[in-house]
Image (cartoon, rainbow, N blue to C red):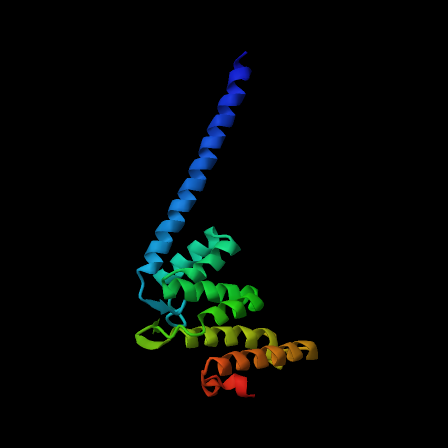
Length: 191
């Protein structure tokens, strides 16, 4: 007789607990987004070679760990350039095709974007910051001809990847040309 009431009670409690967990996750994400949006500059995740992660990067890591990939994509539509920049960086590391479409959408946003690295602070247009990040990921994925691994072995990127690099390079050069952005500031594109 007791088990007849006990099982529904356990199910009710577990449903309440899971709903509370979902609510607390949503509240935590909203709080993290609000704190990130209040930042007016981006920080390198490591301010120096031996310093720990910055507070901003810890918040971003927490937010991205709580978020689905679709939510991270939606952060690229946020009003905060800091959140948009890091969401773009996360997307570029996983899907350069999607990153390129986001870059096309943001290519004319020349809002000054502040970058903090230790005691050094620089301002650069947001679109140029995105182009630089996109190129960094493309270079790592496609353009490096030889890589020295930690065990001092040299490996080469296959020709197929180099062909992809050339295709993506031409595509990006055309985007810059169409939007009257000087490509000479991105040295890797010229080689």
